[in-house]
Image 1: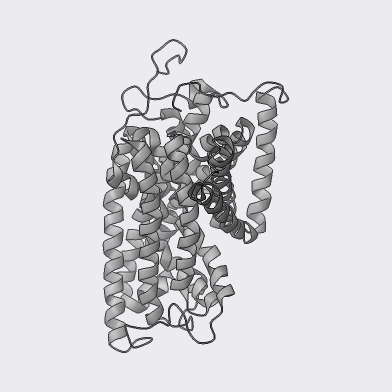
Image 2: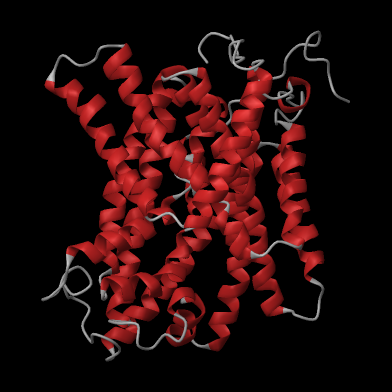
Amino acid sequence: MMHDVNTAPRAHLKKTLTLFPVVMMGLAYMQPMTLFDTFGIVSGLTDGHVATAYAFALIAILFTALSYGKLVRRFPSAGSAYTYAQKAISPHVGFMVGWSSLLDYLIMPMINILLAKIYFEALVPAIPSWIFVVLLVTFMTLFNLRGIKTVANFNSLIVILQIAVMAVIVALVIYGVAHGEGAGTLVSSRPFWSPGAHVVPMITGATILCFSFLGFDGISSLSEETKNAERVIPRAIFLTALIGGIIFIFVSYFLQLYFPNISRFQHPDASQPEIMLYVAGKTFQWCILIFSCVTVLASGMAAHAGVSRLMYVMGRDGVFPERFFGFIHPKWHTPTWNVLLVGAIALSAITFDLVTATALINFGALVAFTFVNLSVISQFWIREKRNRTLKDNINYLLLPILGALTVGALWINLEESSMVLGLVWASVGIVYLAVVTRSFRNPVPQYSEEGL
């Protein structure tokens, strides 16, 4: 039964998480095994220097990770980039950042279910795929209803298994290279640099690989459910990006030795099945396909948790109807109606196609990244006037500018369809905001509780 938020005691998100499960949530969202999907296309683009492209991507992402860390300490709210832009720049900008991010975050759980459906169709084509979609969405939704700790425990297990599987693959790659496959040597600078190599293609490859890191920022939405969030969340954000980057660089180094070029790939733009086939054989390829279903489910669960909490904060603020979006279940301490709504949207994986779905993401993430960096400058360098020492100018001006510039490189490489759909979504948001504020005559609603 829904409680009247105006008379009943307000239920709150419950602080149950610590550093390890938060990092595991971030890594589950990132899904490290996506490396195998992008390896072929980036290897072709960089002429066999995927490891260097990942190194460039990691450096770029860490600038934005530092900006998230600064803002989490100042505003430990589940609203993430929405709250940061709202408090540091203006409520109007904050709303548009939150609205734009919703497009990405609402679609991400559905995309993960859609990927799982594709894997299942390849495994058991005789069974109608809608059955898998309904079962997976039900599982994902029930876990998110019962509490963030339940989701974190499941994701921790999947991430550990994912890293173990990648370790097995690397071991097989090392065995193959040691026995004459590919480069024929395990120690080589070739995956990083070679005579005649050019930096520009590597940077272009890095802009593609930056999207592999999406999700490190999502754990900022867990701030109100994390103990000592002002210390834990900034560390978790940085560690998630760093650990993910190290895994990507380490694995791609050995893969590049096994596959010095893309000549063996029939489909470089979807290289995971062929990598598994060449490295480990048909049986292992089938096992990995099954496990991939589980990894995308874990990623979907993490995304489901994040967007449910973003909508909760926007409902608590009053920019969305509070009775629905601002409701927290008194027993489970989860945003119940939001979790159910995201689950319902994820059911659209029954009919959606992957090309259309992927065109809907990335725009919101880039909006969030851009304004997080700008929010650091606005809040600390301008508003709080932390601009008098060299250290302050580096921390609150130079580093966020570098973060914004690296995100700018991603904007340049964003697909046209993503940009068009994103701008249409943003236009709808402006119209909605005009209605809420009565043609911008009234202020944007904000939650008034101290400390948030």
